[in-house]
Image 1 (cartoon, rainbow, N blue to C red):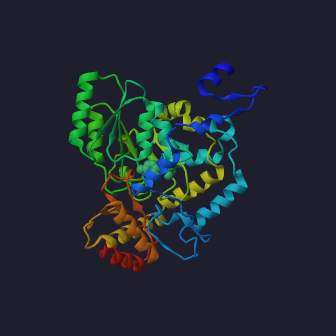
Image 2 (cartoon, rainbow, N blue to C red):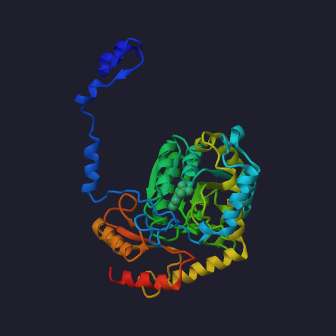
Image 3 (cartoon, rainbow, N blue to C red):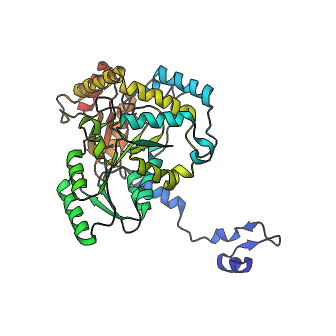
Length: 412
Ligand SMILES: *Cc1c(COP(=O)(O)O)cnc(C)c1O
């Protein structure tokens, strides 16, 4: 657009030097109001803000440096403060440096990245693995890399935001099946194949342990359906990794399905206590991702030192020590759920559903006063009218603090 045209269309003043653009016109703006949008969020009880924690770690209050009991973190095994992982982080900085300096494809692949990917692939019983900066980036890179317009992606209704956004970005037609409802899923698969034939790629997307309800996906049935209808299956093990399976690889390992899942997604930010997402898959898929996944190609590699620390975290997760931590976590889950409506629950995520936003916020505030950090989770993270406390258990919680929290919750 020429300067004259621009001036006419937007009423912008372009200086004679053709440089500065003066937004005098903004005073008369009819643009949707930012202010009003903020007011609207507040009015709905959906206002969120970030609260910094104190300088003594993730569970001290910033105001008074009070030590809080943390039932909010996804630090299921307590590895976020493990001395051997901290030590490895420091060693990684000394050995490989802290910044990767470029995308993996340019000059960002260090021996630490390669070692970590080999270790993930082995743990996941897959050909290869690919590391991303975050789990979110792994989803955003992977689904659009493998699907396009004309393909189909079928998501569990409670799938994480990154899976939904990635599915939308891919251009494939989006379908949603009711949470863990395989009968409904089969109807969709059947109809799609009947209508569109065998050519379009179909990808089924689910979590293994659902992040806000802590329940398990029916993986065996999902695998049966994906094989029957020749679809790809992506399982996000963000909350299963480290917690389930003989070696802590996740729910798929526990039920012996790793080799039959096309894409095993995970994150190093939860049970592994660090940061970084990954996909474990066949060699051909990993090659395609290296060539097509935009969040991999156009983003600087995670710090090599972080990858080195993650190798240490993986070593712990698969070791005897990891097994003991998993057992301790299960003991804590059993203690917490005994005698509640969550009896027999087997994951560390406990949804304490209260209904309204106000109830959830006030319960969270009451617990906070008593020294417990338990977040209120509201729409759009969970469906409307199912606002809740999300209690995250960890192997490092003591029997005393679990008992105390139970007592407080009994009144809510
Ligand atoms: C946290 C989470 C992610 C994102 O992982 P990050 O590494 O934190 O970006 C993806 N999927 C699920 C189910 C999650 O809970």
